[in-house]
Length: 239
Image (cartoon, rainbow, N blue to C red; front, side):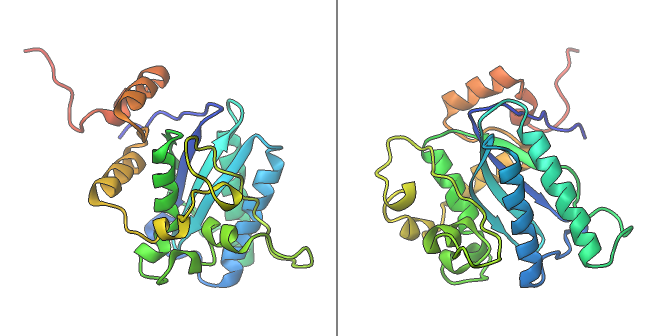
């Protein structure tokens, strides 16, 4: 199967995700989660402001990030450093160097329109643990941007990862504390509709843009993403 085209242009939001090879659980204890958060914090700092972290969620065998890039060509190097650094440190910490690939392959990513679709994507990411039944309320999952947003930065005396969360660039939204929509916790804890879940999963599986039809059609043409929205199967041929 051919790889989906990779888009790496500045000024856009991306949903980025990856999972482990064989889907085995790599995050088993607090120190595993904290180690990834530390690498994530360092990756954001290394970008020099070119990559902003809007939110994230770490699960047992995969993770989700929502990122905004400020320049062309910065997402690829950012993700390469993040995943290779994390995988290398993980293997050393678990004394499993030489045991094969930690991740199933390269990360997946898709563009998100900066309107209500971005809020839906962030909501999907932040309620991941609640949807999986790991917590009753999404904000109780310690390893997420929602938890960071609710409880704020850790004390300066704390040696744990700080993971800088940036404000959300959604226009036309009645925003509350720290830039998120008012009543955001209630919104996140409201399950997404089947249609919303289906659209997001299609974008994740096929790396297709997520947004209004007119915007999506423009993005597909602008960045050559026709293969991400084409129906599966062999192309028709003249007979």
